[in-house]
Image (cartoon, rainbow, N blue to C red):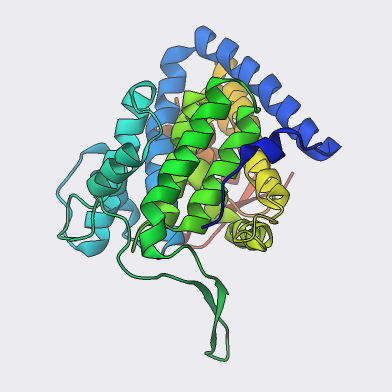
Length: 348
């Protein structure tokens, strides 16, 4: 079985792009701490929006979808799921809530990972919930002509429990001894987790939940306010490309994890910058029309009222709609489409 060894990584020289990303994330994380002290009540509204987006996006990456209305009902009201997709979505919601509320009490171990996986499938009958895989799985791609190609073969089922123990132990050791920067250790752990692919189902979603957990435990709380999963879903191809480039040579211990590290750090930094933009709108205490106007100025191309509402979490939906109507009437915006497909374009 492949040996997991952080000691080689520990002594690696990182390029200026990675060092720049780490420095920028620490700077933004420091700013976020100040923001939270100044306006905690307004920022709490971002938490609910992020929970909904994270639950929706992480499941959508795997083709698990339902309507916008049902997503909100499942996440906000914890309503009973109606079908298989909703059962999977409700399970993700439950694990995300546990991480939000108790991240500091969830250490990284195989036992905890298996428990979280079991909770993710708690709304459905999945005999493998909370157990490592019992069949060999493959990471493959299906092409437009219909043929399928195996891109990567994860570890065999019999190797998986020990491998999970190993990556957890190694991660805990380097973090506990402060041997490796957490923003390097976290993507490496997630990358190893995805290469092991420990479950028959749910590996991608578990990897995103564990990313949030490890970031929280290292003091990076941006995922509570801005959905990292939504950012990954928006650039899904970049995510898969970075993962694929980093997996080459993994079984032999010759892989280059740098593409995946850069991808994940870039995603975290983009989320922090989004948080800063949203805070700027909350901070000024502008009238609704001015707040929506400022939010619209942040948008390029087509956008909808939900995009504006995310930037203006303190405004009600009716306030956002009213402001958009006034901006259309004054010639600042052009409206296109009807009903759910209504979108807006800036004219000035």
